[in-house]
Image 1 (tube, rainbow, N blue to C red):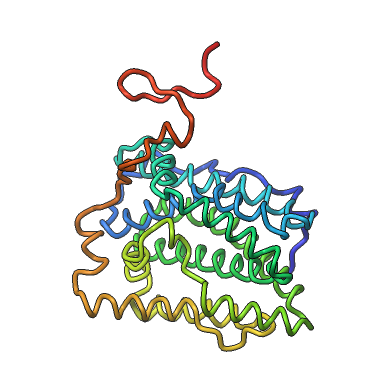
Image 2 (cartoon, rainbow, N blue to C red; image 1 turned 90 degrees about the vertical axis):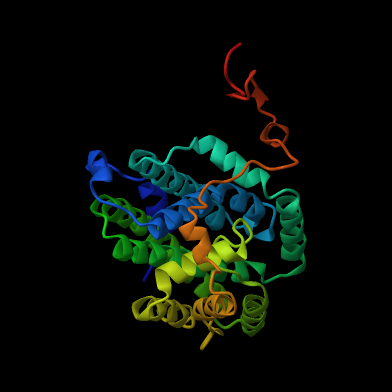
Length: 311
């Protein structure tokens, strides 16, 4: 596995959806679990710009190779969320994409600001912050593409298979960058290896946690991976990440699955009730109207007015 940043910059583009048979989206049914996962995945893909804002205040942003990658990565991820949303709309799930994104962000409250500040301070205090960030990036990209593969297997939906298969190709390139960059940083750097492992063991969380609740994260994990093949796939992620210098034998993804199983054992309704009750919508924030946080003006009746509309 290798990665060329120059080649990546030349080839980076929006997701190619030419030839996807959008007109037959409704021809094959999806389960409640499939739809739950798609909503989760769409929300997290659409959250990438906020994640990027966290990185650009860290010492990692001083690396021109990393910022070049992030610029392309952010653009590609945008189209992942857009096209998953399009798929759901065509399937018959009605929502306004921009309102949903705004509500997801607004529901974070002050959490996002606190997270940015803590990440910024931590990165400048911690010389080997980039090693931790790059490793987490590798884990997140690998678990994301594995999750898409699991959803293809679970759903059996031909159009979804085509769409997610194309997204997976992007995620593989992202994973290659993170893994190779982390490997380069960690090689022959004992201090970075110790810091990396210590931070992962104590602070790593699955993709989406923080934006999504623990129960929502568990619902996704149990639906996609709570069988023999799924567990093997998560163990495979641990094995691949364990090939990075200093991370031999590390267990993160499998540990998260086992913890989700234990929470469900203690409460049999845990996680599955979210799927069964079709809790896919994102409720507007109770205390912070979207308009206050985004500064978008609203027309009578609540319709948003774009910042660049009109004279």
